Amino acid sequence: MATTQTFGGGVHPHEIGNGKTATRSQLIANAAAPARVTIPMVQHAGAPALCCVKAGQIVNMGQVIGEAQGVVSAPVHASVSGKVVSVTNCVIADGRTVPAVVIDNDFEDRWDESVKPCENVDALGAEEIVAIASSCGIVGLGGAGFPTHVKLNTVKLDPKPDTLVINGSECEPYITSDHRVMVECAAQIIDGVRLAMKATGIKCARIGVEDNKMDAVEALKAAATEGIDVVALPAKYPQGFEKMLIYALTGRKVPNGALPGAVQCVVLNVATCAALSAAVREGKPLIERVVTIAGRVANPCNLRVRVGTSLMDLLDQVGGLTDGVRKLIVGGAMMGNAVPSLNLPVTKTFGAFLALGEEAVSAEESACIRCGRCVRVCPMGLMPAKIDALVRHDNYDGAIAAGATNCMECGSCTYICPAKRGLTQSCRIAKAIARSKKS
Image 1 (cartoon, rainbow, N blue to C red):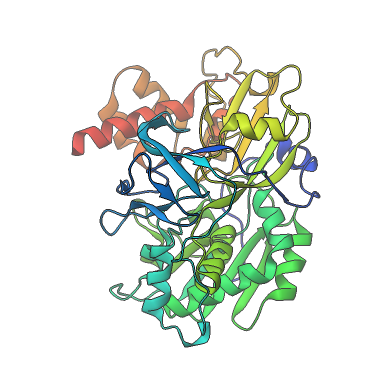
Image 2 (tube, rainbow, N blue to C red):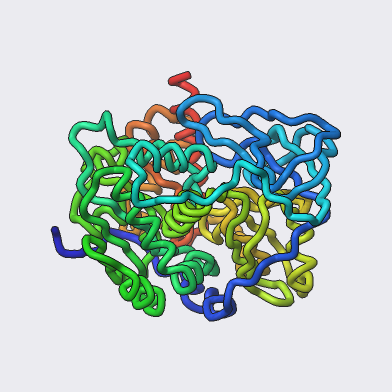
């Protein structure tokens, strides 16, 4: 196995340590179940789930209310027991309007009969573990939401993957939800890693955790078993991107446009592994997740929240907003989505809710001074200023030729730019144009 190394580029947002201080040492608390949940049918990459319940129907916790459509999809389950109020549409954090099921909670927490613990986990084969991950709606909890069963199904891959890469880096400022899961649920994470190894046939797993979370490193090391290596990595953004993490842990470079399988790796998030363990051992579908609520709120914390809980309900539980809030963000400060309303539901991919002040307000941009800082920090080796100039002159073909489609949209270039230019946004525009040309 190659020695660990750091990737080129990257930045050190000034809040990468201080912004985490408010919540990194607090135990995860269970959020109170809301009186009403709005559960979107789109909580994962791939095809939306198809609603399979009707208004007026009584549902149980863990019951399927949205059926997966196709291979790259995932079912959606009720996070409370109660009565379906309506089958409607709702807006999610990325601004899309999607189908959703609204349920009034009866507060009985009545589990569906389909939710049963496995009697003999050791007897399960690879296909059975993959099937459980699929039926329980397990998806990537690091943000992308890719259905986990698709990653675990390596039967047709050639060459076969030989390394399971586990992402515990959590490099975004403010967010500590994965950190707390690693500290408090290390044994469950390791169990999920072992189940993923069995499902994929991989014998070696490496868990990458940034070295500003040494308590998490030690907890995972104490729980780790043979074939699982826990590695402390330098704290640098965007360490958590799968290409960066694969390079740091294995020395392998994923080619532009390729997936981790191209370098014989499968990548999972630590919280996803914990959810996989709960699904296999307890039959528990993914109906809740840990969310960091931080920034300008009365009581910053990490809460275990039911899917479908509204932002307003979350804020009520942390004492509301404090003075000076200028922007509300779902996700991280670097890559999250600014949201205009608190009437949005928590989804499976919802890792944080941030209330930020002046630090989140973009300064007025000025002319590029050709300093080259954006080039130095780009982890993909692009020239963001050049792409930006081409986009501003409507030369989208030129921007695409300059590599805009390889941009990960990490925001490092925009963060470091002294002229405060929207470099990441220009890359995003060029990528959208490239997608439209293919469709």
